[in-house]
Amino acid sequence: MKNLISRKSQFFILLMSFSFLITISCGSDKQEKQKDLQTNSKSEAELAEQENIKITLHANDKMQFDKSEIVVYKNQTVTLELIHTGDMPKSSMGHNFVLLDNSVSISTYSKKVLKEKDNEYIWKDSTKTLAYTKMLGGGESTEITFEAPEVGEYDFICSFPGHYSNMKGKFIVK
Ligand SMILES: [Cu+2]
Image (cartoon, rainbow, N blue to C red; front, side):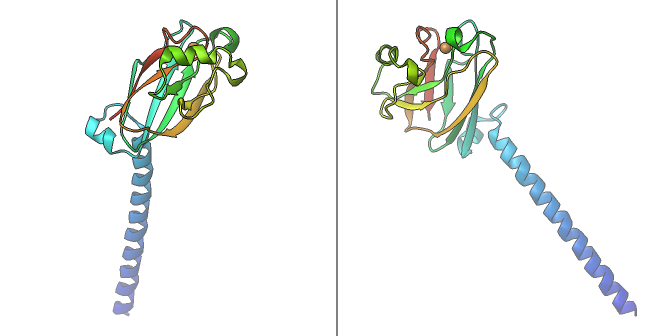
């Protein structure tokens, strides 16, 4: 009888610790994923080790991006969120994010897309445009995911007519 009880309690203890372990591991997995997407307060080495990186870029009614430099690391999957914090409509203050290939200059690209209103001012050629978002009006936001291009320095712009002179920056892949 004694033996039976102790076996029962042994089993119970084993069961409890097992379910405890499961809870712990699931929890930390979730935290790990969330941590992966947070770029704030992380060292460069930590950021570089991540498979995914999240970038949030804001644009406003004054024709400004809040970042002039974006840094990602090779082989990363980039999630870029663009938020138009203004309230002007897309027709007069549209903003997008366009990542240019190094084979094309900002001025060449911008001139070319002036005629591409139907394509939201995107040059639909994957050798010129590496990634892009849709055009946003005030209060809107969007998110795109793409693989980081080769190590190097690239230009990003808003391709809405006339915006590139103000709305541009460097997209650096380390
Ligand atoms: Cu713009």
